[in-house]
Image (cartoon, rainbow, N blue to C red; front, side, top):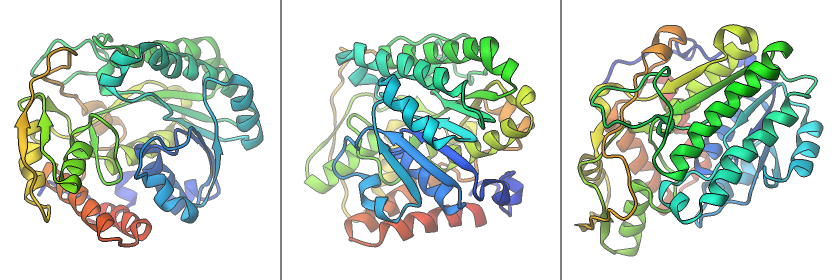
Length: 362
């Protein structure tokens, strides 16, 4: 097991800071957005969510919505007028923007929707946010895939070149540039913190998205079908979804209190030793599940995907005092256990809360 910190305070999360804080989360109905909403709810923040209806069945959000302490608004960030009404009414102090078209392979099939959501949708959020009277901090969650991927063995730093081969990755590079422009043109003068967060590949319970490794594994297990994998040796910065969530909250606190110092791009990812290939992820998952899954190689090169992607998180470690708390094996263990609990019809709201508490008290 990896090195662990001993307390909530050591994670540089001030529980009192979040209590009663007015927070607007876009994309709150998605996998990552639901975990963020659950965490903020547990910290007694005053949360408003704005997103489309969940696009998977099952859905983590639908499973726990009635227990979440938040006001949920269903809407599309591409609709400027509706989004403005929602944000104006919420009058947030902090905005965490997560709404996106998040899938690489889908972006090949629908590049227009991908750019419209990930770029123009972001423009709408920033354009409206710059006129919010109470706003102190805005965090735009982009992606580790925003970098120009040279298949380097070492991790990408925040200062490395942006790019992206596929429409999704490229749209996230565009989102970084849009954020930088709005920061220089508006937010700096308004003294509102504006940063971007580039997280690695997140795993955890509650994800049923298409063309993602863990959800595909779970579907194969539940349907008693064969899991088809494209790139068994592809290496990614895997981390449990709770890890970057607390990185985001850490950063938001600092943005709120010292906007000029922290209004930059930030990587959130695992240590180098926890960056493993697809084959290793599957093998580790098999060891924690009640039923194993048959696996076959289906090498599909029709849509380019990077084979090697690592992040350098030394900046977050040194300036935010944030680092990965669960190692790779723990991340897989807690992911597998979540799905086992879900399909055994356990109280998944309480179980998810218990994983957050476990993370903070390890």
